[in-house]
Length: 123
Image 1 (cartoon, rainbow, N blue to C red):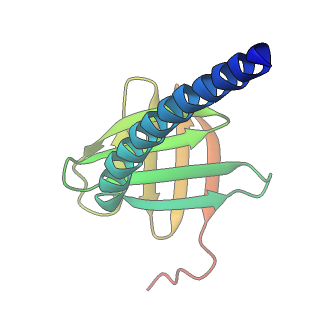
Image 2: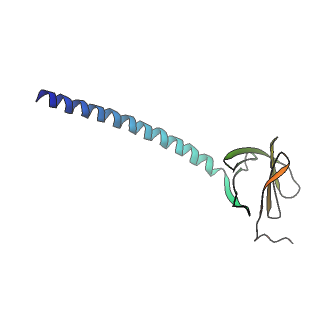
Image 3: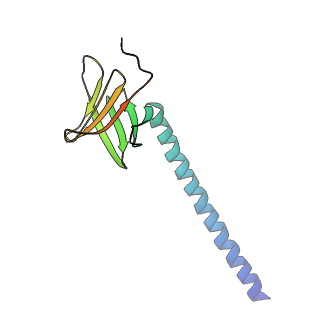
């Protein structure tokens, strides 16, 4: 009988300790989600698909003039460049441009993604 009580007490103790650890883990995850939500509030997000079915995910931070792109599993960070018309973001390896509804991503000067917005009307 004493062994059963000791066993039950041990299991209960382990359960309580694991629950406390789980709660602190939930709090840490909640804090991370809050920070992520704050970052997302500052971003304009979009995703487009080209004719081959490739997806380009985009997040633009207009306040800092930067953009994050996800293409073929690769996360690409670029800085905005000044343009008279349209938009352009680049880094030493990639260049993203958008003009008159046509979006192009180039890697090392070679076009790897193109999407034309069919609803965009050119005057």
